[in-house]
Amino acid sequence: MTVDHKYFEEMEAKIPHGKVRTRFAPSPTGYMHVGNLRTALYTWLIARSQGGTFILRIEDTDQGRLVDGAVDVIYRTMTECGLDHDEGPDVGGPVAPYIQSERRDTYGKYAELLVEKGAAYYCFCEKTESEEDSGEFDRAADPCRFLSREEVEAKLAQGLPYVIRQRIPEGTTTFHDAIFGDITVDNSTLDDQVLLKRDGLPTYNFANVIDDHLMGITHVVRGSEYLSSAPKYNLLYQAFGWDIPTYVHCSPVMRDAQNKMSKRHGDPSYEDLKAEGYLTEAILNYVALLGWSPKGEQSEQEIFTLDELVKAFDITGISKSPAIFDRAKLDHFNAVYLRSMTPEAFTKVAEPYIRQSVKDPRFDVAAIASVLQARCEKLTDIPEKVDFFDTLPAYGIEFFTNKKSKTNPEVCTKMLQAAIPALEGLQEWTTDSIHDTLIALAQQLEVKNATLMWPVRIAAAGKLVTPGGAVEICHILGKDETIRRLQAGLALLQA
Image 1: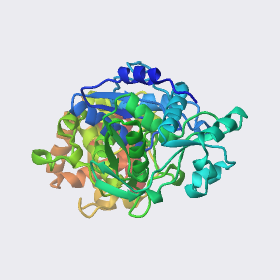
Image 2: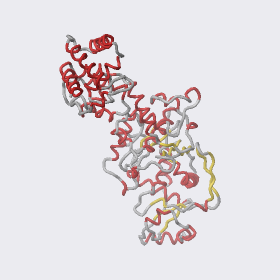
Image 3: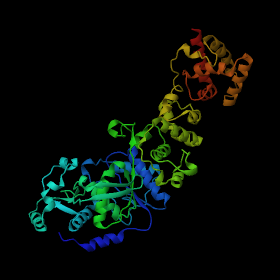
Image 4: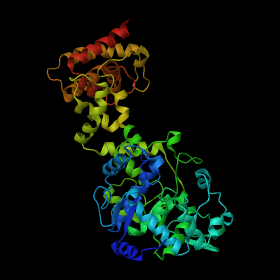
């Protein structure tokens, strides 16, 4: 039980000082949910907006919940989102290692130091994990809390298994949070939590405090569900004589007014949202505004690049109120981002989705993308919107009736009878030539443009709603396929 104080002096000497240092410390348990992504983003923004250092730390002390490949998900998500880290397992740094299981020996030493300081004690009681997890532990009833030094050494000499518990003092504890202000709790409501488990690994709460101090973390961002643990964190910092970092507790992201988002209830992770056709930039922009709002001149601004977020971000903009995840709002953000892309960039991201239903190489992907870009909210909407190019769907004669366009089967019959020979006579099959021919024909027939365009589009696509109008669709289909489809539409009307 002898503590080597030189070790602690050497550890203190390694701690970087002088600027803001933040960390994102996920557990590799399978996926990056929206709340996790928001924590990563806010933590990164605090560091970048203040010229600080952003650290990635992997918290794998809960060995039973680890999922193979989960660390790769973390790296991939951070990279795709542009949340680059200055220190971490893959890039190293002055306070390595950055994986908790590789720091195992460190925690035991600090737990023993805490025992020496009287702020922790060895507990040899037989307790099940479920009892520990429940938090229902009456410290007054724990006989180990009052063991003498000699009694403890005797039990250790016998090789009895033990945990090390935090010794909660009498009185009250006040801690400060950047969002929620000062909060005071009665220490009688705090349990003597386990710091070091029987297997020698630290609990999540203990490892966090040790690592945050030794890594020089100045701002700790986490969910508001950890507010109840903050008094115990403070007591640990105080027992060690360490500076307490700035706490930033963020309110939860909710599925609705009553329920938090949860993977168990089918709520999406970042990768799920990507698979559902949302752009990373749109997801990140939307997530930034889930519980944070800009101030001043930018208070009405919604669309932010990552660089713009760095300039605008301020902790005081984080709200105490829970944020509700609104799919319609995310759809809006995604549509804005899709429409702001260059045609070339949109074609590149849209092509895999176009080719899910348009497999015929005759049809130009770039041309199809051009009619989609202004009419698409999610990339996954694309296959269903353009499936008529490869195969004309079966449709009913009622499609030719449209009140606004002033069409019915009789009118459409006349329109197609006139349109087919007019289009057959074209020498060049370009958007302009198709457009000019149909507009001139409508004038000649003394009808509104829509009266002619409606039956041409219905016959060419076989759908009431299409991306692009009659001219664009006919151009993409090509002359022969367009004439064939218009003739089939006329035959349907005349049957």
